[in-house]
Length: 564
Image 1 (cartoon, one colour):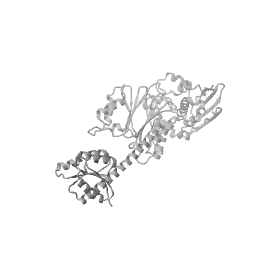
Image 2 (spheres, one colour):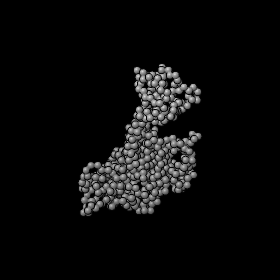
Image 3 (tube, one colour):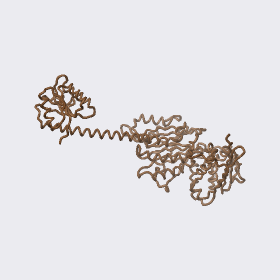
Image 4 (tube, helix red, strand yellow):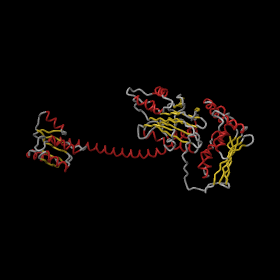
């Protein structure tokens, strides 16, 4: 059975109006009638009929004007209008359609053709209603997805921007192709006053590309705050991404490990375009990609070797994602590496690399083909950035203030384990030490590094007199550490009360031949270069400093006053 419709008949001739009403009623439809266009509009506003049979020529208001008004009132709902006309000229029929008519029926009326047209318009109306319902459903689901993504992005931004990206010596620009950016930028200050900066570029765009960024950011910030080395961070991130990411999804990344105090930059680049050290005189040194991206290689085969570059105050470090190089102009030409190098060559030494590259992209009329990220770190002498405070969960417990411990780390442990983060967490149980955790960790790290590298491995720090020397030094360190079969480092910790507050004593000794501490200290005051700073730094930071005869062990003290 045909579906029942409410049909408005607008016809000024009473006989024709009655004839049409009878025909349409017998076909099972509900009929409304109007004698002119003005009445038709009034009835439409109150009754909302589903189809209109409209006479073209009527008094008061003709069918053409009435059809236009009815279409406006209907909005995006389809209300078909069939013009009833005795007009035969093509222009008149065209005018019916231009006024909003969907079809026309010539007088005299054929009931069979009229019924067929009504049913055809009814089917068209139902189809349009279905499309509208699907459109509205898609719109609601899309809005829900956008709301969920906004919530997810708010959480993501708090995790991803938890570090020191707002530091005055860091500038960055990111232009995502979607709400989420497949590019990821992280920066953290470690307890040893080093800065880690990581730029990552996940496969794809938008939310799928950002999924892996959450665990990466949490691992990065958590391990940096606890004092893990940059190599430890890389290995853990790679293992986690390899475990959770689907096949074909990975993260190209560059990690900078900056120690302006030591004048060193350690660089690991896996799959990103070359970064650059831009010297104060404008020369630029490439930071070359030598590794596979994170999440590709099994943990046992991961290569965590860093390139080492000497740096000094005034140098700037530039990192970029491949969205910069892959920007295209109207001729479908890529911006490319050669144009980037030309921009760096042409820039004034004092000019920001980010500003110059953005201007060059604008002049190139680049169309961004990927997420685009630029980050520039200026090395500023004396800039001290405070690490984000560590969060302590649970009910505060009284500080343990009367205890001691001694750890002896032998060859296998020295090869495969970094004890410093665990020791820092142990020391931070003493509440009074938390405000100087960075200083304590820096001294502990220097003591351990000296004992391991110069005592057990017998490395000569004078190798680090040049950029190549740095690279050779750390390469040799890795080789000797892998081959280590005996030797030890002992770390003793003692926490005790004093009359005025408390005291932390740390003693580190090793199985090496020892060294002349007095000679090293005297030479250090006269030293120019980047080696031999560790002992002096330890003495300056600690409240107490002493060494055993023969230089095989060094002790330091930190003291604090009792709170009033």
